[in-house]
Image 1 (cartoon, rainbow, N blue to C red):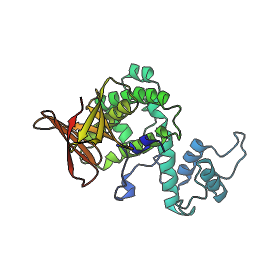
Image 2 (cartoon, helix red, strand yellow):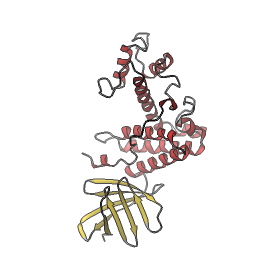
Image 3 (spheres, rainbow, N blue to C red):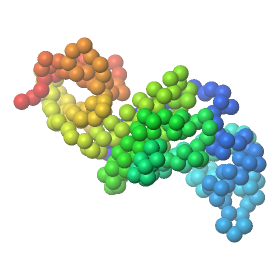
Length: 288
């Protein structure tokens, strides 16, 4: 298994369910309504373009929708006669539609001063609509568009492919910011983190290193770190087959980097490294 599959810092954790009626649906129409079915059919296209196809909203139509979205037969698909099924399909179509947006056309978007996607079709009250109305967030979206495109070129030969799936997860996580008390700050942090992650993982910015650390007085206990000139600054650390991306955090002295369950705090020629949740700190020094 490619060790970089272990590197997933902007992975979205499951969140507690809240009132679903607060979350805008794909077509800004009531779930399972005739208008909603029609909107889904326009995006998934169950017919042949010549008027032939299942009746929109029928069980046969729902079966075709599941097939087109590659979820037919999966155990987590709700019953077709339930509102949960409509919500499930709505979320999948929304995620896949948004997945294509970060690799839009930056030059065209830059000319309008907006994000990388068209703001004409966004849902009122959605995170996407908020980005369209915010100059800073639009600029960050546009920047991510270019970074993602550059990363996609370098990821073309990844086996198994993972960048697209990760981007889909990131988009879903970004859109969860509608639950935050500070929606703008949440979205901003999501963009900054994702941009820095892709720049570091795919070596899109200058780097310093690798730096080899010997820990606990044992040269065999080694951590290797490469530092990247991202914003915020990042490093990728490796210990054996494990890899961690860490972001710099404010510190009273020295440089402190924090990953998912790892930290590296370097001060006055010595580094304190914690590798794994609850693991003891190791005292490490740079090798010559």
